[in-house]
Structures are given as structure tokens and as C-alpha cells.
Image 1 (tube, rainbow, N blue to C red):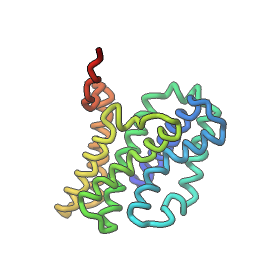
Image 2 (cartoon, rainbow, N blue to C red):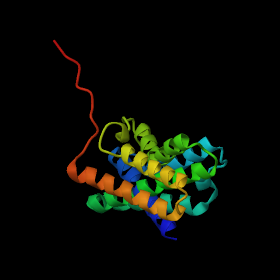
Image 3 (cartoon, one colour):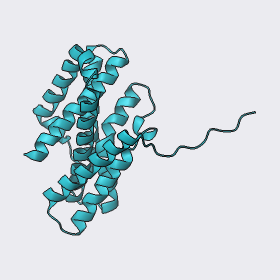
Image 4 (cartoon, rainbow, N blue to C red):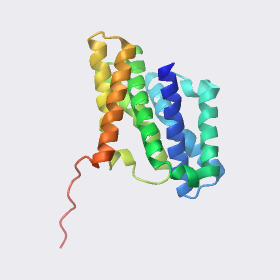
Length: 204
């Protein structure tokens, strides 16, 4: 129940972040809902496609679509007020990242994926929706150019794989790994950490 609650909290946060980005890009209400749904569900859909799970889980269960679509509509109507809750949205987003990355890794392992593939699939589950959101809005994906985001998701996925190899209780491993992702993500935001980037080309 705790994991399910965290999963839906993450869905709401991802849908809200996608909808807010769509509002800032001046999309209409349909576009806001589409981007919100894509941001929230995109990572899970990519995961299921990579694992051969068709149709994807989130497209077979109506509450996922209802919660994400409803969240996007709420953001469309109340976006000035929601935009002021930046810290709460970032915390919820970090929770969603942790839950999706670790749960995605566990699902991949249970489906027979190798540890290496499970780590990559878990990371993709966490960051996939945000990457698709940015592509729809004609931006370079944020996870590839700013902040410790994908790295945090990958670290959580690695912890899950290690716990699986040691035959530790899956539920406890998922919670600890998700907490680690949230901790790294929030610490990176607080300390303004970014991954190194290449220096610009010499001019002249």
C-alpha cells in the first residue's frame, strides 16, 4: 500500500510538472493534458515495451489515466497557484523518480532481464516521461543537460540489483533504494549540483 501510494504521488507530480511546462509553452487544454499524461506515463510505457509487456500496464488500468488526466486539468485551471508550490512539487517529483526507477528495475529483474539491462530499464522508467515531455515541447531533455537526475535514478536501480543479488527482502530493498534516490535528488537541488559539461569551443 505504501508503494502504491508513493507511485500515485509520483504520477501526480510528473503529470503536474508536464502540465506546468505545457502551460508555460502556451499549449491549449488538450495539449496540456497530452503532455501531462505523457510525462507521467511515458517512462512506464517505455519500460513495458522494452520488456515485451503489451499493452503497457498503465494503458490497461483506468485509474492511471484518470489520475494523470485529472491532475493536468487541475493544473490548467489553477496553474498560477500551483506554480507557487515549487518545493512541494520538486519533492513529489523526487519521490516519483525514486519509486519509478526502483520499481522499474524490480519489474525488469522479475521479467528475466540481466542486471545490466534492468539498471538501464529502471533508469529509463524514472526519466523517460520527462525526456519525452521536453521533446514534445521542442527542448533538449532536461535530464541530459542539467542537475543530478538521471544519475540519481541509475544509483537507485543499481541498489535494487545489488539487493536482488544478495537475496534481500524486495520490499525493503525498494524502499531503501527509493529513499536513496530522493536523498540524492534533493541534495543535488539544495547544493545546486550539476554533472560536468564540456567547455565551449574556442572562438577567434
